[in-house]
Amino acid sequence: MLKKLLMVVAMSAVTATAFASDAARAEAKQVIDLKDGSTVYIFKDGKMGMENKYGRATRMKKDTVMETKDGQKIIMHGDEVMRLDSLLNKDHSGGG
Image 1: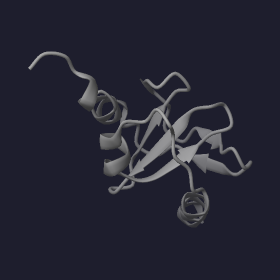
Image 2: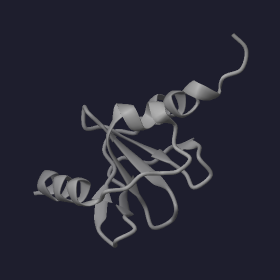
Image 3: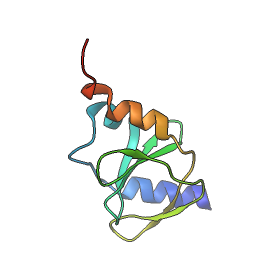
Image 4: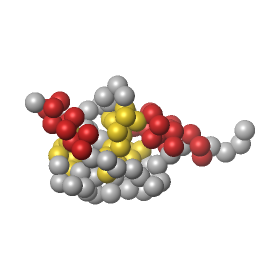
């Protein structure tokens, strides 16, 4: 039941973040905007990472219920904060 709800929410929420890295968007299967201004990335393996409203990858406890901009509820599965952080900062590293 929970998987079905998550899939319905993921498929119905067509969103994109203006500040998200191209690498993070390319790696994610789905990008969902939340009511509080945060963004959730659902990766191809089903794990999720969250970007706060300031554009930084942030930690979210497993099974935390989040509300999308359109009022639907989703549950956090797999806190991929380091994976998302490296993708968000991929195009912003200095030097080289």
